[in-house]
Every structure is written in C-alpha cells, then in structure tokens.
Length: 195
Image 1 (cartoon, rainbow, N blue to C red):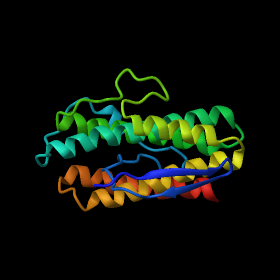
Image 2 (cartoon, one colour):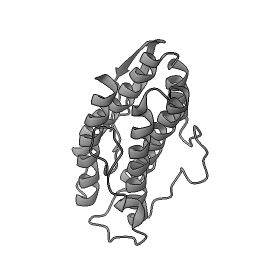
Image 3 (cartoon, one colour):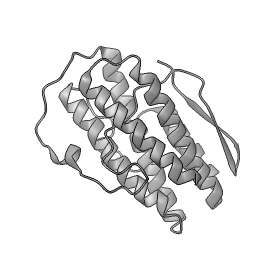
C-alpha cells in the first residue's frame, strides 16, 4: 500500500499530492459526518475486547499502528488550529470526531493485539517521522484562516484517499466497517472545511 504525501505550495494553498500507497486509515465516526462531532462514543466506552473477525498479517498490524497515528495527527492539528482560530468552529468540532476515530482504531488494535504508538505521546508528537514532519508542515502553513482551512481540507482528502485504497487490501469485516464509516465522516469533514 502506498503512503500519501502532502506538499505545501504556499502559505495559503495546500496541494495534496497522493504519491505513494495508502495505509488503512480510519476509525468509525461517531458524529453526523458534518464536522459537528456529535454522536455516540461507543468505541471509547466499551472496555471489553471483541473477538477478531479475521487474522491480520504483520504488515496489516503495522498499518493499524500507522493509522492510529494518522488519526492523532488530524486530532492534534485541529486542536492547535482551534486554539489559533477560535472563530472557525470547524476545528474544535472535528477534533472531537477525530478523537472518537482514534478510539475506534485503538479498539481494533486491542482486538488484534497491536501495540499503540500514541500512548503517552503529547499533542504534536509522533513515533512515525513522516507523520511528525507532515504535522509540522501543515501547522506551519496555517498562517491565515483560509490557509488553516486548506490544511484541514488537505488532511481530509488524504484520509479519503488512504481509506479508499485500504478497502482493496482489507478483508477483516470489523476493519472494513471502520474504514467505510471513516470515509463517510471524512467526506463530511471535507465539506465543513471547504464550504
């Protein structure tokens, strides 16, 4: 699977250049998909570990670890931009949704026995060097409200592309459910950043 790369063209414009393959990236949204962040928090509330619906390969388990950090990137970026631009409510609302997405991925990780690389990591800190660089690049590009919205839109476009590609290499029913739900949520988030 390829990894997507985002290229910052200028302070006010971000071009998503989907160059490499995509890792499964997503979690079950619990909001209404429009960036409102409202919905159930069932994924975070269930302490029990469900039975796996399939066996994941080592590569698929590594993809889950990347995926949860990608969700953390979105959450952390949106929280930082919410603080910087409080007049743009999309960031605070969608950050809540991204936290729920992260929780759903973490539930899958528990199900399949995958170590969580986000444990103990403060906002903006990642195990994956690529995601760390991307976070800093996007945050530094958000020098105006319109550039901040463009950064948010770039993240959501990347997520949609990653999730769509992940569907083709995933057979586990529970993982597919999360991917499909995340695609729908990311489409709603993208609309919230671009309307």
